[in-house]
Length: 390
Image 1 (cartoon, one colour):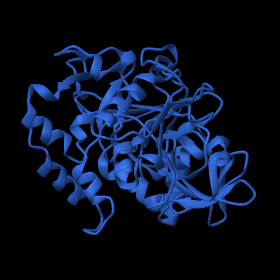
Image 2: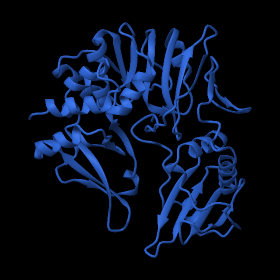
Image 3: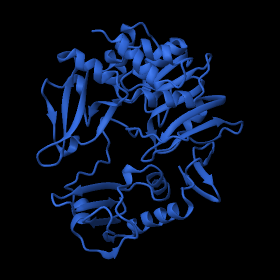
Image 4: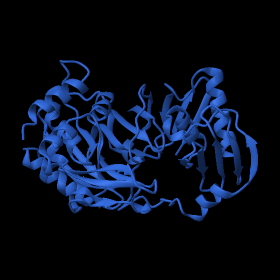
């Protein structure tokens, strides 16, 4: 397999400058070695998601093209790792709807690393996943300065073996990074899984003046913060949005609510309070600023959408407290008919944020200041607005 020229092209495409210190690590790290198999998603005949297995060795030329493109490759769906799947296997069950591990697109890995301002002497802790990002850090810094963690014992074992096969031997351990980290003091903590708030274990493990870079679950927010003398940290929201899979605590996400659940069926069919929306339909997960603001103000909303053969589009929102909303419109430009019920009016909250965006031209989450207490409470603030999580 001739992968070297493809890797160098990927490095040239994803690094910011020709003199970037990440160019050679990316140009010389065999990403295909860490992703021999992966899942691709399509729609089945019933419109439900289907995950199909891709086996790189079955078509080496296509393997190189796919692996050395700047894209995320899903390696695990539900509890099913691609390494353990049978040739030709596909997943179509509702319980297997969500990806649970991946090899992140290389440009996003580099964005997180650049945001961390990693120096040649930095001791870094990163998240494992496929092991590719760990390999980049080892190539850049040396194995002795890199610690890599994941909640999945198989991912840790497979990554250790694959790293060793190309000459890297960093510290790689199994742990729930939302609760504890391997003993040590780190100059940089970079998480390519999203967390609900900043774990206190990270603040404890950061060296004085150390920096953490992570994303907040269910948002598009990268937060960059430096540790302060009081044990907390201060920083800001990154200028570019990013999305990562949320941290899980075991084999799968334990809060998955299947589409045929009683709660979703109620949202689909109940009448509730009927109004006309202020704006044409938007699907919140397709945004980053609206989605992030809504999540900070009203965390935990799930979203679905559906389009019929005749073009009628329906968007649904559901919260664990029983609040729900359903909005439908026959065209993109028409105002939707909205049905909603439960303790809170979810669509009204969404329209309030969109009104805010129209009046001000942006939302205050863009470029917001970030303050993190020693106990992990994160406050975002800008233009007199603030929101706190944790």
